[in-house]
Image 1 (cartoon, rainbow, N blue to C red):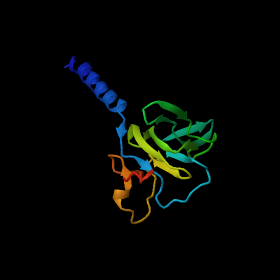
Image 2 (image 1 turned 60 degrees about the vertical axis):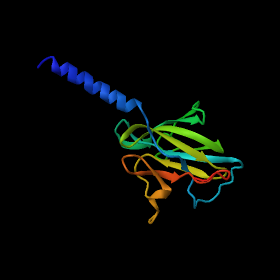
Image 3 (image 1 turned 30 degrees about the vertical axis):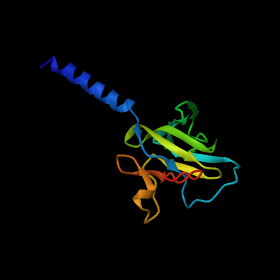
Image 4 (image 1 turned 180 degrees about the vertical axis):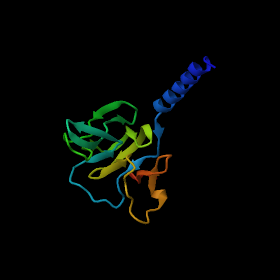
Amino acid sequence: MKTSIPITLAAMTLLLLGCSSTPVAVAPVGPNPAGGLTNNGGNGQLEVFSALKGRTEGNNPTWYQHSSYFIYDGEGNRLEWVDNSPGYYATAPRLITLPAGHYVVKAQAKDYFWVQVPVVIEPGRITKVHLDDAWQTPTGTPKTELVSVPAGYPVGWRAGALNGIPR
């Protein structure tokens, strides 16, 4: 019996490491098809509502901020690490500007250690990725227009046509 405990612990550790090291991948997310345009030239914007992390300071109560994440180009090269908090006490995620194109966001999500989300950035549009399970989709939105994680909650709008390329 004593020898089975270390073996069981080792097996559980390997199982947990295996699950946490392989990110979940989902379909490409694009801007809201009904969203308006911003005046950003040939650039678009990205806002990632990553998993929430609790913060405390002295006797102050806990507040929550969105966790940091990575952005990769279409070839898999890491472009930047994003500190996803625009201010010390800010609770909204950081809005960043990127040239139009295809990217991959690697971030923590509710119920997942890492999620890889391909994103499409379109000129003058904002692409939002909702990994905190707090997004309320518009009533009557067809599920075919949304991208969801395996846990079932939607994380964004399915990427639409870009430069004439259909979905």
